[in-house]
Image 1 (cartoon, helix red, strand yellow):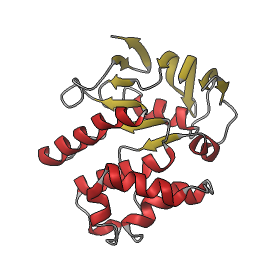
Image 2 (cartoon, one colour):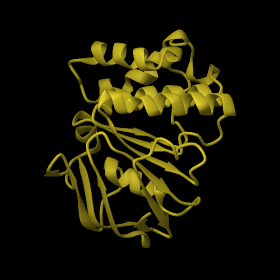
Image 3 (cartoon, helix red, strand yellow):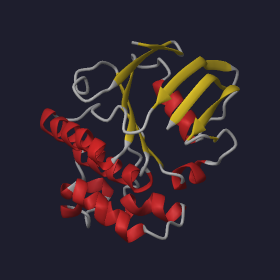
Length: 214
């Protein structure tokens, strides 16, 4: 599904990721575990095309995506849930969920939306609310729903449980665990394995931009 080989990423003059190798197979759930500032978010942004590689490369479904723009990666089936959610507060929940489909001009938008609501029915119940009216946990559910609109093959979930009340964290874990039945592959970042240990097929650790297999 995804292969990362000898990837280096810098932000300005600062080297963040160094010689990263990682493989994600079909229907495989992979954990990327490391403390804050270790480089987890940088790697997720590099996979999504938000940050360019300085060296090395990324292959998705057998094709290099090093020169592929972010919106075309989304159209190819990669979805990204950022740690800070990035909802647009003045849009409704449904409008926030639909943003990736609008951006990539997907012809199957309505079918995708119905699929997402089936997987996360809570989001449909408050679809008419504005983003600013949601709790932190509800925002995480909406951010996951939005990622699923483009992430039909691979999901990048950056700290999905961070800052969420225990009840909603358990619900998020339940939803994420169930995504394997949908045929999805997932990269999930956490500072530790407190929420995801039971659902992961393999684990990588990251420290100071260096990734190692567990």
